[in-house]
Image (spheres, rainbow, N blue to C red):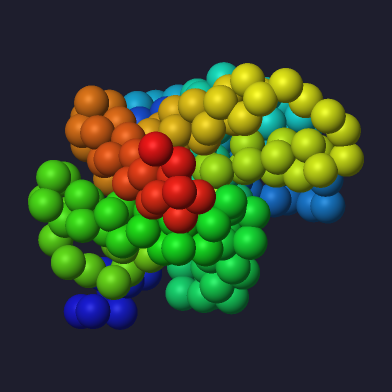
Length: 206
């Protein structure tokens, strides 16, 4: 019974309605595939399979939930037990790219607490792993901060990156939890605010 439930949870999802589907495509020969339709919404389950990476990236930047479902559920398969290595690597990368180690630890702690008490998500290691991985992956805008080590940018760019990360985290959290946008924004904003205040305290800023 448990194995059957786990197999059900590891199925890919329709990027339109978010429901699980048996398969995303049928392959008849190398390079010849047929995209399958979702039994619930009757639309093609994942048209991004045939899209170029740049199209997917643009839709991610535009915060389209369809693109996030494709990336998190069908491409990276964050629900799979095979993602443990990806999870560890993502956490380490998030900590290294952050301004302060303690600030990012506070961020993750606040994220888990708010997910439990505000979203009232049942305590399940699998679900919390999905939430953590989704939020870290959706922080890809932080990669732009690496460019600031090479080229000089105005300080306003940092503010833009932080706002972009916040909004991206909100979309990713909404995709994996299926809660309202307002609740997900509140959770992400609280976690980011806690990290910001921690970093200000560490820097001794008034």
